Length: 120
Image 1 (cartoon, rainbow, N blue to C red):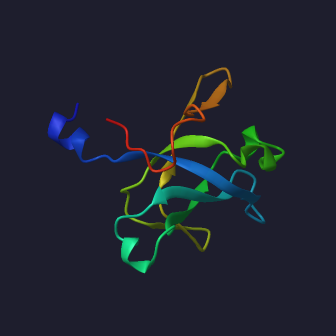
Image 2 (cartoon, rainbow, N blue to C red):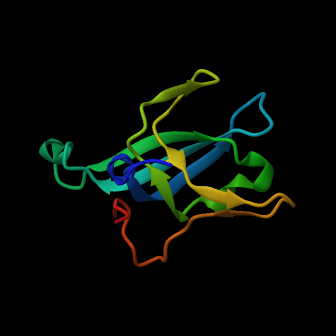
Protein backbone atom coordinates (compact mmCIF):
# COMPACT_ATOMS: atom_id res chain seq x y z
CA UNK A 1 0.00 0.00 0.00
CA UNK A 2 1.13 3.53 -0.70
CA UNK A 3 -0.25 6.76 0.64
CA UNK A 4 -2.37 9.07 -1.45
CA UNK A 5 0.45 11.61 -1.22
CA UNK A 6 2.84 9.07 -2.75
CA UNK A 7 0.38 8.37 -5.57
CA UNK A 8 0.07 12.09 -6.27
CA UNK A 9 3.80 12.18 -7.06
CA UNK A 10 3.30 9.99 -10.15
CA UNK A 11 2.76 12.09 -13.27
CA UNK A 12 0.87 10.29 -16.03
CA UNK A 13 0.50 12.02 -19.38
CA UNK A 14 -0.69 11.19 -22.87
CA UNK A 15 2.08 10.93 -25.43
CA UNK A 16 1.82 10.49 -29.19
CA UNK A 17 4.25 7.90 -30.55
CA UNK A 18 6.21 9.47 -33.42
CA UNK A 19 8.47 6.52 -34.22
CA UNK A 20 9.16 2.99 -33.03
CA UNK A 21 12.28 0.94 -33.74
CA UNK A 22 13.54 -2.40 -32.50
CA UNK A 23 16.66 -2.11 -30.38
CA UNK A 24 19.35 -4.16 -32.16
CA UNK A 25 20.55 -7.34 -30.48
CA UNK A 26 17.53 -7.54 -28.16
CA UNK A 27 14.31 -9.57 -28.32
CA UNK A 28 12.03 -7.40 -26.21
CA UNK A 29 13.14 -3.78 -26.50
CA UNK A 30 11.69 -1.00 -28.63
CA UNK A 31 12.98 2.55 -28.86
CA UNK A 32 10.05 4.97 -29.03
CA UNK A 33 10.14 8.67 -29.85
CA UNK A 34 7.17 10.24 -28.06
CA UNK A 35 5.65 13.72 -28.28
CA UNK A 36 4.30 15.01 -24.96
CA UNK A 37 2.99 18.25 -26.41
CA UNK A 38 4.01 21.84 -25.75
CA UNK A 39 6.43 22.06 -22.87
CA UNK A 40 6.24 24.83 -20.27
CA UNK A 41 9.98 24.48 -19.68
CA UNK A 42 10.66 24.81 -23.41
CA UNK A 43 8.15 27.62 -24.00
CA UNK A 44 10.94 30.17 -24.00
CA UNK A 45 12.66 28.34 -26.89
CA UNK A 46 9.92 29.33 -29.27
CA UNK A 47 6.34 28.74 -30.24
CA UNK A 48 5.53 25.22 -31.32
CA UNK A 49 8.27 23.60 -29.23
CA UNK A 50 7.24 20.17 -28.02
CA UNK A 51 8.56 17.87 -25.31
CA UNK A 52 9.91 14.95 -27.38
CA UNK A 53 11.32 12.06 -25.34
CA UNK A 54 12.96 8.73 -25.97
CA UNK A 55 11.28 5.81 -24.19
CA UNK A 56 12.82 2.34 -24.14
CA UNK A 57 10.18 -0.33 -23.54
CA UNK A 58 10.12 -4.13 -23.36
CA UNK A 59 7.03 -4.54 -25.55
CA UNK A 60 8.58 -5.72 -28.83
CA UNK A 61 7.19 -9.26 -28.55
CA UNK A 62 3.65 -7.84 -28.75
CA UNK A 63 4.41 -5.75 -31.84
CA UNK A 64 6.28 -7.77 -34.50
CA UNK A 65 5.62 -4.82 -36.85
CA UNK A 66 6.44 -1.94 -34.53
CA UNK A 67 5.34 0.60 -37.15
CA UNK A 68 1.73 -0.04 -36.02
CA UNK A 69 2.56 1.97 -32.89
CA UNK A 70 3.24 5.18 -34.81
CA UNK A 71 0.45 7.69 -34.24
CA UNK A 72 -0.99 5.96 -31.17
CA UNK A 73 -1.69 8.12 -28.13
CA UNK A 74 -0.84 6.22 -24.97
CA UNK A 75 -0.42 6.84 -21.26
CA UNK A 76 3.13 7.24 -19.94
CA UNK A 77 4.72 7.92 -16.56
CA UNK A 78 6.68 11.09 -17.32
CA UNK A 79 8.42 11.91 -14.06
CA UNK A 80 10.65 8.86 -13.62
CA UNK A 81 14.36 9.52 -13.34
CA UNK A 82 16.01 8.77 -16.70
CA UNK A 83 17.46 5.26 -16.88
CA UNK A 84 20.09 3.75 -19.15
CA UNK A 85 18.91 0.53 -20.85
CA UNK A 86 21.35 -1.19 -23.22
CA UNK A 87 23.23 2.09 -23.62
CA UNK A 88 20.08 4.08 -24.46
CA UNK A 89 18.49 6.63 -22.15
CA UNK A 90 14.82 6.04 -21.34
CA UNK A 91 12.95 9.15 -20.23
CA UNK A 92 9.67 7.64 -19.04
CA UNK A 93 7.56 4.48 -19.09
CA UNK A 94 4.65 3.43 -21.27
CA UNK A 95 1.67 1.99 -19.37
CA UNK A 96 0.19 -1.35 -20.39
CA UNK A 97 -1.70 -4.30 -18.95
CA UNK A 98 -1.22 -8.02 -19.51
CA UNK A 99 -2.76 -11.25 -18.32
CA UNK A 100 -1.26 -14.57 -17.28
CA UNK A 101 -2.43 -16.15 -20.56
CA UNK A 102 -0.65 -13.57 -22.74
CA UNK A 103 -3.32 -10.98 -23.47
CA UNK A 104 -1.77 -7.50 -23.75
CA UNK A 105 -3.00 -3.95 -24.20
CA UNK A 106 -1.46 -0.51 -24.11
CA UNK A 107 -3.40 2.11 -22.16
CA UNK A 108 -4.56 4.37 -25.01
CA UNK A 109 -6.57 7.57 -25.18
CA UNK A 110 -9.13 8.70 -27.69
CA UNK A 111 -7.82 10.67 -30.65
CA UNK A 112 -9.33 13.97 -29.43
CA UNK A 113 -7.14 14.06 -26.32
CA UNK A 114 -4.00 16.13 -27.11
CA UNK A 115 -0.47 14.97 -26.37
CA UNK A 116 0.66 16.30 -23.01
CA UNK A 117 -2.72 15.96 -21.29
CA UNK A 118 -2.15 14.88 -17.70
CA UNK A 119 -4.17 12.20 -15.91
CA UNK A 120 -6.14 13.45 -12.94
